Every structure is written in structure tokens, then in C-alpha cells.
Length: 436
Image (tube, rainbow, N blue to C red; front, side, top):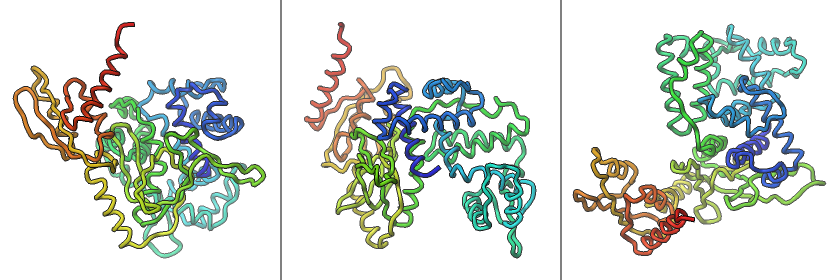
């Protein structure tokens, strides 16, 4: 499928996960900036993908897609939204041909011409006949992503499946490797490539007649959908940062009424896009562990700009910039976010907060958490009942949820305005629980 369709389905699934199917077809289409017809077509396509990826799901076409998600949630340790990456990693027209190439190279090493003959001799009527240039392009792609390797020797080069790792490991070592990949994919970022590796290992173990429970020893339930969905843009942006390239995209802010806009390909039906066209120089990617969000920090129009990656669509790389100038802008950004709890570049303030030690608890889990998550802050006073934590930080907006998460174990002391702000918020929360 085209990249535009990938953007559309990312936003489609994000909204479905956030609303739990509460929107009507018309509301959903309006929010996405597409027609109801396009909404229905996208929904049918996603149902087909889910059916192909999860054979155990009910096949009734009348079943709502949101019900399908809820049905699978407690029956699988796989994050369901990962199926988008499995289905959309390559264009639909390429998937059948690449599958045929991989199956052929699994038996023995072959040249590009031999692989072309196999494709042309395929009995599948749906497979369009490729030329040698297309086959060589597919081989280059498969070699870059590590699926195949070129054997040493003179031309014509021969290619084979790169599966030395799983062939050389014992069954016990394969189980250990699978467990390691499973833990890391579910606890570290980025995670999509780890999930895809885990799927490959799982299929290999099941083909070797391992019991299903032996390859699913851990149970994870996923909550931060943006973490997975936004990785569709992550490596494009990292590539642009590595090569000092500007990027162009259509951006929808979190306050926007819409989260997607289709490309205007027919001038007769051209309409204004609701998103904002941006051209900017990526400098840094930041991940917010608390909310599971990715942020892009970049430079354009003489200022540092911040974008939530969930609002980025139709991304394309542009021209490269001078290395010395690029390093200067990176240093400028590093100085601006030096005291940012996350990405805030506001006025520097010093926050003092008292944390109360839990009674009868050993070890002191409050202090351990502050020391673990408190970044560059430090404990400036301590007695047997409490300790005072101090940190200079850009603004109070980003650190506030962290301080509030300690509940009654944390009291903000300074600055006075921030203390009053916290008091007002706690009074508001208290009013929610007053008797009716």
C-alpha cells in the first residue's frame, strides 16, 4: 500500500483505540477528513488484514471492528495494532512477489536471473510478471533489511536466506533468545522491530513442534498505542537526523478538529487541507514514558519547534544542510532543553518539594522512586519522617503530573505560585468525591 494509506490507517486505528468505537461512521469520517465511502473501504481492508493475521478471530463480516479488537485483547499477548506493520511494510503489489522470492531462496542460493524465471513461471494468475530490474531491486531491499545475504564468489551473484542464527542455535538456546527478545520488545523502545523478530522466532519454534505455552511464558498488556503507531515515522526521522536532512510533512496539532487529510490527486475535487504544511530540520527525538508519546524537536523559521509525532502525516525527506551549521543548531537546542523535564523551553524555576517517608515500609519506596526518576534533582534535607527534593526545571507544566502522582506523599513548597496551583487542583479533585 502507498505511504498515504499507511498514514490514514495509523490515524484510523489510533482514533479507534482512543474512542473504543464510540463514534458513528459519519463522526469518524469527519474527524479523519475522509468520506464515509473511504471510511467503509478502509474498515473492510483492516478487517481483511486482521482475519489474515489472527486466524482464531470470528469471521462474521457483520462484527464491528472495535468488537474484534476487544475480543482479541485478552486472548493474545501480541499487541494487536502491530498487525498494521506486518501488513503494510511493503506495497500490496510487492508482498506476493517477495514471498515467492523468499520461498525459493529458502531451498538453495539463486541468482537474480534464476529468481526471475521462477516468478515468470509462477502459476499464480494474480502475480504480474516482473522484469530483471524489479527483481534486483527486491533483492537489494531484502539484503538491506537482513533477510537474505549475498554469497561470496564471482558474478552472477547468488543469494540465500540469512538464517544462520536460528540454524546454529540449539532448541534451549532458541527458547532463551525468544524470551530475551520478548522481554526487551515489551519493555524497551523502539519496539516494533523487536516484535517482528519475536514473531519470526515464534513461528520457527512452533514449526519445530514446540508447545504454544512454551513460547509465551510472559503476559503483557499494552496501553500506549501511540508508542507503536508512531514508530512508522521514527526511522524516517532518525535517518533525516543522521544525514542532516530537512523533512516536509502535513501536521495536525492535538487541538485540531481533524487528524488526517487525504492527498489531493484530482484537481477537480481539490480542497483545502486542515493540517499545516511544515518544512523543518529534525534535531532530536524525545519519548515521553509517562504518556507513551513521541516528540520531534526541530529548527525552522529561526526558532526551535516541537511536534507531537502522532500529528505528522505524509512525511518526505528534503535537501541536506551544512554540517557545521547543523551542529550549531543541535548545540542551541541542547542548551534550551538543558533543564527541561521533557521538552519544555520555558522560564527556569527552582522547585522544592517535601516527600514523606511511608510508615513501616522498608525499603523506602518513595525515596527509591524519587532517586530513580528525579533526573538531575537532589535531596537537600532529610530526617526520619521526610526529605526535601530540589530541582531547577524549565517551567512547571511537565513536572506537575510526576509530583501529583505521589499523592499525599508529596507536598510542593516552592515556588509559592506553583504551591497555590497544586492546592487549587487538589481541592477540585476533592470536590469530585463529595457526597451527592
